[in-house]
Length: 295
Image (cartoon, one colour):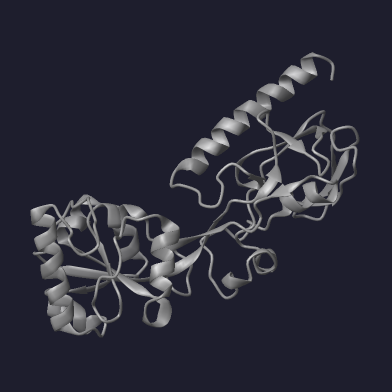
């Protein structure tokens, strides 16, 4: 749906819109809540707010274009934290497919193209991402084995998408990804020792669910990709939209990724779901209260 006309009286005068069939219709609502998501697939906005991310792929759906944010901005809504764009450390190069953090959480490790670990795999997304970007050719490989595949069923999807390299041994996997077999074997041996001792003396990892000492072995190539936009429409604790003068815009609310200022510079995993549900309900409750009060 593409909006054709939005004026300063949003919520007081109808909004004209055009559907995918080209027909124009009218939305006449007493209250409006913008929940159109972020702008992670709008590369013009990405370039404007964080030029360092030019050329990055995105895990976002094609419709994540920031249209709700731009509509609000057109009626003087304040935008906040627009420069804070989160990149996820493990996306498939050129495809924007996300490799969930659960794979690393269940015991996988990251190695660079030389077969060496370079980071505690369970640090925050921004830290892991920046360290991957420092590696040769700005990519890495998620390495795991059969034991993890049996535990984490999400990996089945990656096999179906043909994203996984595999080998019956460490040496066979190294050949599949064109990596030094001696170095990869040494890395896996060292990590297995850390896992069995429950102490990573090299990078300080504290969670070990798998010792990578049995195969088959698998690898997925990854690089950081655009994942979440923390910035958006400024709201108050009632999910009401705030204008550039710090005043509430009557009848207008926002929630979810379209709203900014909730997560700061780096959203923690899972918090967007809490954000959506919490401010969606708060905003809806406030809208109902206002309508019942004749506002």
